[in-house]
Amino acid sequence: MDQTPGFIAAVEEAKLGYAEGGVPIGAALVSKDGQILGRGHNMRVQKGSPVLHAEMSALENSGRLPASAYEGATMYTTLSPCDMCTGACLLYKVNRVVIGENKNFLGGEELLKSRGKEVIVVDNQECKDLMEKFMKEKPELWNEDIAV
Amino acid sequence: MDQTPGFIAAVEEAKLGYAEGGVPIGAALVSKDGQILGRGHNMRVQKGSPVLHAEMSALENSGRLPASAYEGATMYTTLSPCDMCTGACLLYKVNRVVIGENKNFLGGEELLKSRGKEVIVVDNQECKDLMEKFMKEKPELWNEDIAV
Image (tube, rainbow over all chains, first blue to last red; front, side, top):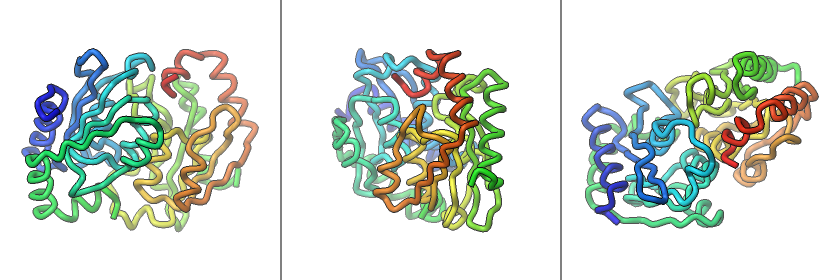
């Protein structure tokens, strides 16, 4: 799972976000036939946006799509999705959510499962290390991002 | 409730959205001391955005805020919030969601209540009429917006 193009793209996006001084979380939305529909990273710092978490950026960068485009799709994300990103995955009825890690933050995985979504936690060391480093370096930015 | 500044702003935003040829749903985020932090409407058509539903636009237009700014806040919206907007209200821990109507669409009201949020449905005729008109005029756009 770590070597799928969607997961690799999500990790690349997270690193981009870190390099830009932002919240280093990345995501990629992949169609059922394996095409990356959109990829992106958290844009709180870069665009001053409270809504463009990584998964939201991936959806936004996928553009306007008919419901059929999301059928069987997978959202790859480097960190367990918050309530907002969980809800976005539910709205767009993605089939599966593949999560880099949930040690540094545990989001709406149970809600996703209760609504019939497949949830896979990869427990990727690179994702954990990057997030842990960021949380130590910029705790206030992280708290702002998850509203605590 | 229909005459509070937040609700009036949400309805104005919905009408703006309609006038622009978009999905006519509006929202306003109001702080506990009654200040409008941000207001906005669905921007699917105007910005080609799948994430800027009305409540998301109101949050986006509120900009980056510390968690404390959302304490005791109310999200006013002209239509029952979808899963994504429900999740955004949960992430930012708004205290209360005031909903213009839920006859044309019923979103995550039960989830909001189960997480301790106050949910008030105003059942406003103007909101119902505007939404019903739009759904008849542009059913494909509406279906795209809620991914059905």
